[in-house]
Structure formats: structure tokens, C-alpha cells
Image (cartoon, rainbow, N blue to C red; front, side):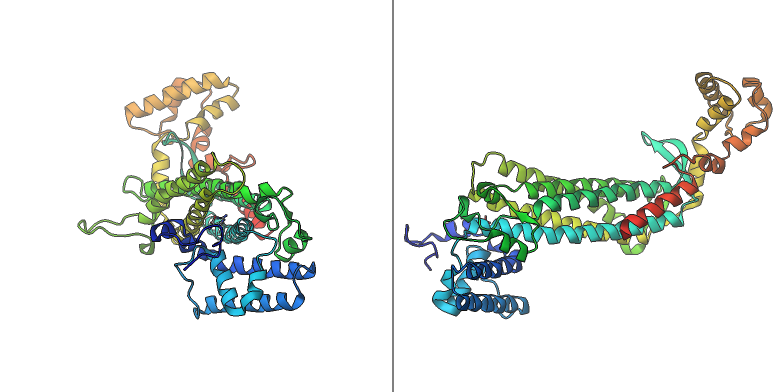
Length: 458
Ligand code: ARG
């Protein structure tokens, strides 16, 4: 069949060119946005007396029917169409004849695609924000459950200082809160209407762009028509925010993989979020966490792919830009899936406090507290640090830990030691003395949980 743009050319294209050119397989996702955008456009054209109110009514009613028919499955979207914009217009014209042909006055597909993708992504952004909130809620609940459970805190993956498992979990809640912030911020710049840019240069018709923008829930309009149809920075911005979100999910997943290994055994994942091996009967694999870690690369790829597509494009629209959609759609779908899986995995995960405690007792992670004890007795920190290091070396040599080293041995390193040292190196005390804002003490973790819950509610 000849194309709607037949005229300058015969409109007859080869099958392979059609297949290559067509975007319907992925932009059909935006049918709702396309149809609502067209309804607002028809309403504007009539309000401005560019088309009659009778024509506008006919167009709007028919678009409503098309939407209902697609949603009910009565009319499948034709995968042979060039794109969703052409498909909708074609059906409209088939159904109401010449009146349908008036809809495309004072607009171009370049406007439509820029409009539809903004509308589609702002909804996706909202969904991703609410899924992230659900994950944060699950993390905060777990943190509350384990706010008093002592585990080693690491640097360089070496045991460093005692912390609570609740404190460790809350670090991720804070990161995820910022992810929400980033996505909401990006939405502000996305929610600006390009419709009425009219291919690239604006139009001679007396349009009312604000009217359309307002009808479609936009905050304002793009103030330069070339910019309106050419840039996809809002896609790149969303992809950046999603890449950072995925980076957080990936680090969290990596820790879950480590924690559920026999080497750590700090946590037990629920059977519902693990898999077995086809050959090794003993296996319980953290596939969900690994997949989230793995899919992070995909989202980074989506970001880099889009940036690369855009980097050499002269203004205004170029067909290369059709490539924008698959990357943002893929990144949104991936992020949504990962967030849901992560929420399920976290809320069903159980900690094994005995193993965490055992690990915490093993790595001299209270050595800083021993040094601080000497500082409190009037010794300069550098001297206290050196003596504490020697005591650790002595413990390693004699197979002792700071909690069990005899007082006489302590005294042989410094006469500042007395029985108070055992209180100072007691792991629970070590944790609960860290009352500085944002520290690991139970009261601080409680304050963090409270803060996060309020942020979620607000
Ligand atoms: N399918 C196209 C896309 O996704 C729509 C815009 C087409 N515009 C044009 N002038 N060919 O980018």
C-alpha cells in the first residue's frame, strides 16, 4: 500500500526498507499517549477556529473509540504500519473519512514522537519511583528487625569496625532515596511540551500551545521549536538516573551474593528467591541477586547507546532518533523488574546473627576502641594507635582476642590499662558508643529509619 506521505515520491517502498524503517514493534507501546495527544490537538484546533467544532468532535469521538478498541483487544495494532502515529491517523481516516485528514494540521510526527515519549516516560518515572519507595520500605523494615544485630563493618572487604546490620541496610535506603530525588528532578525537565513545534520551525496557524500543554498535564512548553523536536536529553537524563539506581541495586546484590555464601553465611535467602543446580544437589544459588547485578550492564548499555546515537546529530529531527525508544523502554522495564525482585528478596531474607557476631569477634574490629580508650586516659592518638597495633599482633601470636587478653598482658604494654578495657572493647558497647549523627548506634539507626519513613510518607 502507498504511504500517507506519497506525493513527492510514489510512496511505494521495498519490503526490506519498510521493515527496516518501521518502529511500530516498539512504539506501539505509546498508543495511549499518541491518541490522548491527538485528542488535545483536535480540541486546540477547534478552540482556535482552525477546524470546526463539529470536525473536532468527530475526531475526538473516533479517537476515543480507537483507544477503547485497542484496549479491549477488538482492534489489534497493525505491525505492518510504519509507526504508531501513522497507524492511529490511518485508522481515524478509514473510520471518519476526510475529517480525519484534518487532524494533522499544524503538527508533525516529529512533534508527536517527542510528545508521546515524554508522556510515556513521565508515567514510567512515577511507577519507578513508587517501586523504589516499596523497596526502601522493605529495607527499612529489615533494618528495624536487625537494628541491634552486630556484624563486622568492612573497608577493602577487610573487617574494620563493629556496626549493626540495621545500619548497613539503612545505607542502601539512603542511596535509594536519592535515586528517587534524581528521577523526580529529571521529570521536571521532561514535563515540558514540544507539541506545536511543527516539524522544526513553528507554524503560520494561530495555534495555542499552552492550551494543549495544559490539557496534557505539562508544566510549560518548549520555547524553541528546534529544541522541542530535536533533543532527547530527558531520555539520557532518565537513563543516567536509572543507571545510578541500578548501580546501587547491583552493589546491594553483590553483598547479598557474598552474605549468602558459605564463607560468610550472614543471611539466608528465602527459597522463593533462590534456585538450585541441575547437577549439584546441595546448591542454593542467589540467582536473583546475580541477575540484578548482571542487568545493570544492560541499563548502562542503554545509556551509552543513546548518548552515542545523539552525539553527532545535526538539528533538527533525524531518523537516528527513532533508536531512542528501545533503550529507554528497555531500561525502564529492566529497572522495574529488578526493583520488584529486590523488594521480594529483601523482605523474605533472614539474617543469621550468630554468624555475624562470630565474624565480628574474629577480626579485631574493636582495635580502634582500644586506641580510643588509651586516648581517653590521656595518651596521644598516634602512640595509642601504635600500642594497640602491637597488642593485636600479640593476640594473633598467642591465639587470643582483645576480649580475652589477660589484664597483666595489657598492663605490660601500658600502665594506663585497667579493667575498664574490657568494657571498652565489648562489641555491643563499641556499637552503642557511636552515637554521632549518622553513626551505627541503635539510637542513630532508629533515627535513620524514622527519617526515611517520613520521607516516604511525604
Ligand atoms: N517513528 C519515528 C520515530 O520514532 C517518528 C517520527 C518520524 N518523523 C519523520 N520525520 N520521519 O522517531
